[in-house]
Length: 98
Image (cartoon, rainbow, N blue to C red; front, side):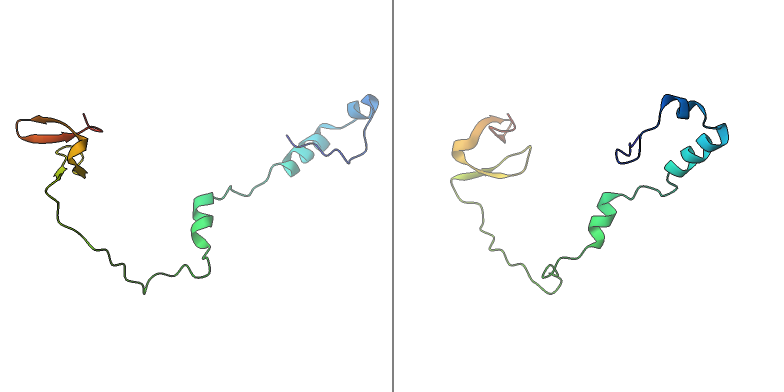
């Protein structure tokens, strides 16, 4: 529970004099009816300047697999032959997947 350190302090005698209704009203005031907002939803609503990439085309040059490369049969990534760990039943497996 948040504490207001700037509020004047009360004596123990004053604390005992609070009525039940006053305590209930303070409790109701301290509880907020607002629902917590999801940070991800709030972050998605912000638009950064220059972040609109809708008109941009991405071009990537794709090279065919070279003779010194292989495709791992587990992760399906292309690796250099130096990364070859094992070959089982004609399936090539890289070191990361072995």
